[in-house]
Length: 193
Image (cartoon, rainbow, N blue to C red; front, side, top):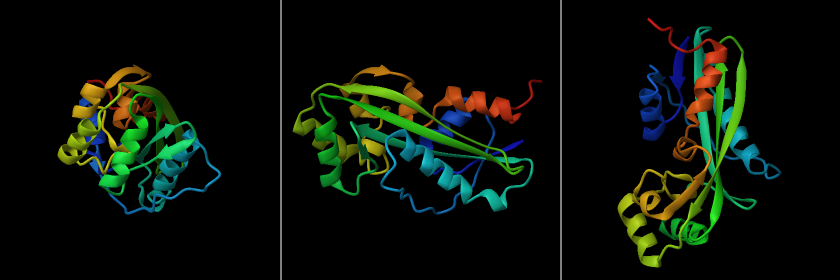
């Protein structure tokens, strides 16, 4: 099976490459809105499946598209990508000194009609951060493409995350262990030589 990555995320691209998976990138612009009644992991799963649905008609029978969505939850509040500096500052101010949950959902949709949607959760613990640290990070990293306004692999993750409960890769945007397992079940992994 041929793997199609439907993501512009450099982190997801790198993780798939590091897993030894060959893939082609195809991008379709999708509105990332969701029904208000959805909570926590349901939001990420809905968005991942919604993205995959946009590719269904264009997939060949031997292709499988991988779509993903990562959200940060502080209690029941979903913190998606910040729109600007003020929103990023507000998000990081709320997250600092606390634990929060990161959910990454993945949808694997085959051109043959098969589909699986799953999510993985990691709890992230941040140490207290000063306003100067938050401002420095936003000014240098410009985390406007990251749920919760931070990347675990960035400077803020290195100096601010004290503990993870779950997969680091889920926080980066792709639960690699689950992706491998589900691709294997679909018969979409490369055959060993």
